[in-house]
Image 1 (cartoon, rainbow, N blue to C red):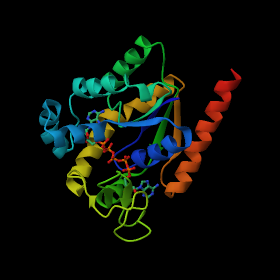
Image 2: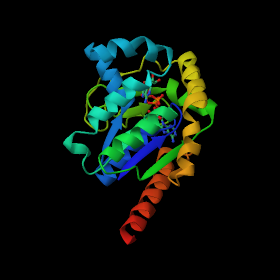
Image 3: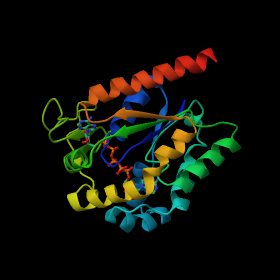
Image 4: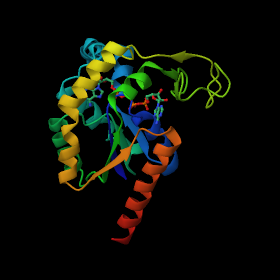
Length: 223
Ligand code: AP5
């Protein structure tokens, strides 16, 4: 399956992508994670992206498309992937369509997570991540079972993102409404959009996504 997770900053794309990865055995591709890795490594792409990301703006389409275009060539993407944070503009979506068409394939489904803005600010501002395995947590909504110890790998070091402060989150939200939300109509017209209520607890949101993907897989198998 080739899936896009669409949703504003803090909607739960990364959280749910990890559950899809585990349940369906397809790899999560997060452009945000790839760009943060490029910034940390000080590559040419990272140098161009750093200040833009710290402001909460989008990096130029050409950079995002190149990053994802290179990544989907890898062998672990052959059986499918979950795109988390890409595409984010109509030109990125058009480029993605062309990239997949050149490979004789296409997107299967776009799952949109719908969450109101005030909840997104709270989710972003309380987020932290295991430095070792990348598992995501939240000060209020998802604490490690043992305080200070990662549930998944047992590591004890965590980090917070530079763009997870209220002012930058609000700027990321404004960019989302202006540049990314038109993608919902773009994919609705293609009959690929499934909207999920992202306001409930993490497990409840996962049940809705799993339902959509199960139904999709069953109908693809019967065609
Ligand atoms: P990116 O890393 O993609 O960030 P984002 O889209 O802003 O999304 P987030 O990672 O903040 O949120 P999420 O939806 O994954 O939520 P999460 O699951 O972590 O992009 C960062 C930057 O990179 C961009 O601003 C841009 O500069 C650049 N960039 C990236 N891709 C680009 C592209 N294609 N084009 C141009 N520029 C690009 O959840 C958030 C928190 O809430 C967590 O703590 C989690 O535990 C908690 N949580 C999750 N679900 C729930 C729930 N249901 N209830 C309660 N808490 C929950």
